[in-house]
Amino acid sequence: MSLNRDCVTACASRYSYSIRQQLVCGTHDAGLIRGFRFDRSRHSVFKAQKPFGITESALDWISSYLNGRSQRIIINSSLSECQPLEIGVPQGSVLGPKIYCMFSLPIAEICKNHGINYHIYADDTQVYLVFRPTESWINISSRLISCLNDIRNWMKSNRLKLNEDKTELIVFAPKYRSNDFSEFSISFGADIIHQASHVKNLGVIFDKSLNFEKQCNSISRSCYIQLRNTGRVRPFLTEDAAKTLVHALVTSRLDYGNALLHNINSCLINKLQKVQNVAARIVTRTKKREHITPVLIELHWLPVFFRCQYKLIVYVFKALHGSAPVYLSELIEEYRPKRNLRSQATRQLVVPRVRTKTYGERRFDKSAAILWNDLPTHLRGLDSIDAFKKGLKTFLFKKAFNM
Image 1 (cartoon, rainbow, N blue to C red):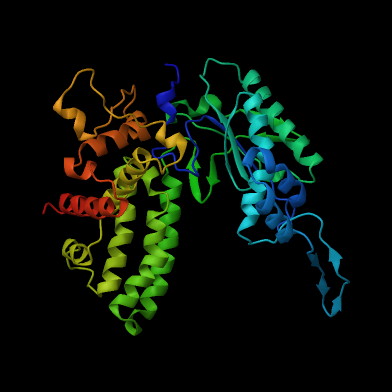
Image 2 (image 1 turned 180 degrees about the vertical axis):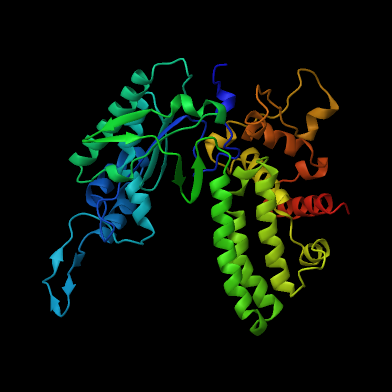
């Protein structure tokens, strides 16, 4: 069986910062020095005039912000003289990432010239493409190598350094086909980059078969560490303070990237649900033998399974109202019948056909359309994001607890 496009789209939500439908992904860290400077800021400001429309007073304001800066170094008690900074922006500044994105715009053009897709978030870049098992890996790898070499040459000419040590290669494929791609590698500079079993992309661990087992294990492990520490100080906290602490240290971890976990193995979801159950017991000081459902209802917490659905549906709402990334909006298609029907005004989505159940059913366009169409008509007709979120949580809460 050939590996089709549906087989590799288990990345369900395709976040603004996630890897979209892909089989090959190379990443690089474009940071020059993780200190005060990481780009030629003055050059980037002047380049911003045409593609970004920054001119006159706005351009002068940015130039004024960047110019006239200096730095000095202290080692033990010795202090160096001040040296002017002609390149770079202050680390941690609001304008820093934006100016770097302006400056690194040619990276996107290089990827386009090679016919390779890309995602860029600040100085973290993924280049990727989709291929079939019947295609020659030599041709595929040569395209990737050529693209990465051009990126490296551009960065070198602009006083940036591509970090080859942080460059990774991964091939996403069904588990039963993973051995077919185990020997894939690419030559990059003086190094040979072998295929990784998993990669970390903006805090989310992607494994070769996209089952997210490592991601769930990582979330569970980090949450239990926080829960143990919270449990030690719980006797000294009020319930409201305990809720705030748990939301900051535990719930935030359960919710981060959880749209990717929709329809994964139920055992992994149950593992995360146990984390939430422990958190609920600590907040309410409920004993271990007492049933957890009344506790979750009292706290008004959605179970983990429904929290994943909540995130996906909110993305659909944003996509329909023009506030989601373009690559998500492109996957959403409103149902428009050829003739006038009552269903035309219900704002339903077209449910695409898929060839595989394990991966195809987890695709964003498939799972999101099904979840959206299952919503009550009055919810789909809302235009306010705040009203929609409130109504959606109420709907899912009643569904979760059969209320």
